[in-house]
Amino acid sequence: MPDDLLLLVLTMGVLAGTYKVWQLSLDARAAANRIAKDACSRAVVQFLDGTVAFAGFRLTRNSQGKRRLLRTYTFDYTSDGVERAQGFIVLAGMRLEAVGLAGNPS
Image (tube, rainbow, N blue to C red):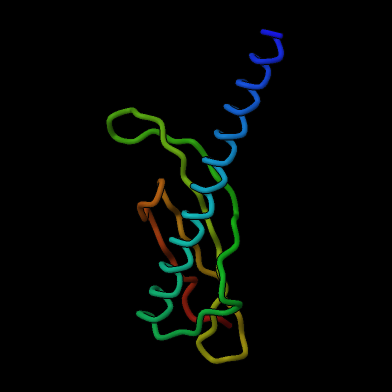
């Protein structure tokens, strides 16, 4: 019986950790969506498709040498309603590291 209890506790811990990672990912994506909409609004271009797409992540170190996870998202926009261009957002946690637009889509 103690082995079953240990297995149950370990399983619950793994599930809780997985849920936390999933929730943080959803929160980061929501932040990236807000940033993309704002960037497009400031650049006077149209944000297309209404959402960002996860493009990848990487581990880096900050200036103090502490590891951090950078998430990259991409999004499409248009300045003329015809041609699409792609922008990007890089987040460290929920903090914006970089945002960019490709210039005039052509």
